[in-house]
Length: 198
Image (tube, rainbow, N blue to C red; front, side):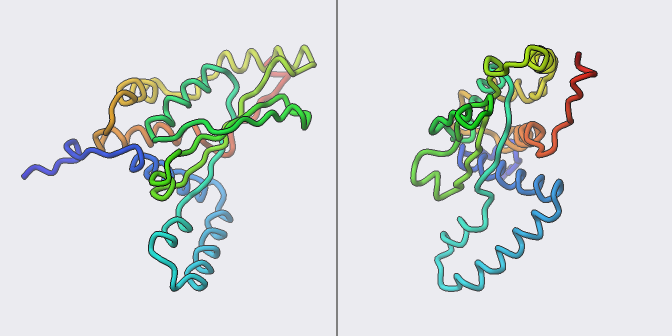
């Protein structure tokens, strides 16, 4: 029997699990101390929860949170479509302007108890509000930078358009989508020089 990866179908929960694992690996690579901290926490959890169920231990071990900063409504729309493929939806609204930041935000996460048990990943997603930047020069600089940048590769967009209508996804396609999705998420994006952008 042919058990080619092309024939294996994965659910949104399984795609989210792949994404969660890839995020954890990325965080460990970018911040070695993060990996050390996770190893310490994991060791303590195992020592304290020897009698815990496998399900409880599993939920303690998985990557639970991520974050991404977006600059335009079109980026938010595309990230919503991407996370929907992983069974994640916007929950809550946070207006950070009350803290003096020109930003509002939401969290993308699974909604059902089953999905939360399988992989309780939540990605805090913030969006810049250009209308709240009072400095004209800074606002113009941000507008230019955001109009030029492309955080989604053409292949990522193509995969989103191909897979978002499916209830299950070929494993090979899911793996490729995860590779493209992780490229959007680095913790240390390139800095912006206002003078160079002027």
